[in-house]
Amino acid sequence: MATLTSGISATPKLRQFLEESQQGQHQGVSVLRIQIRGEDLVETARKNGPANGDLLQLEEYLGSDPAFFLLRASAAQWYVVTWMPEGKVG
Image 1: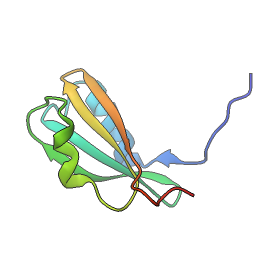
Image 2: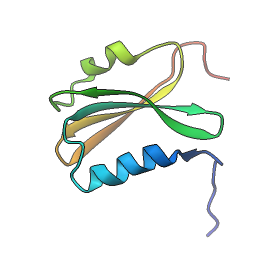
Image 3: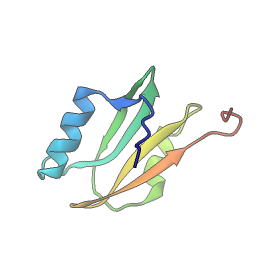
């Protein structure tokens, strides 16, 4: 079976954060905003605080540019949320 690639990859810094998170580090991070810059996925904001999975935590990070959010639900679980502001498709 063939695989499809987008050509977009995470920056080394973002990859390191994700790997360290899998190993139990960064427990204090509750929200991570990731955006596409050129051909890279780049961390553009981070919020420390309690991990409750509440979408209201994202309000201050929403803007006029599309983004992906990693929202910590618990110590071992993340939600992925996509943000596409109206008028930004196409």
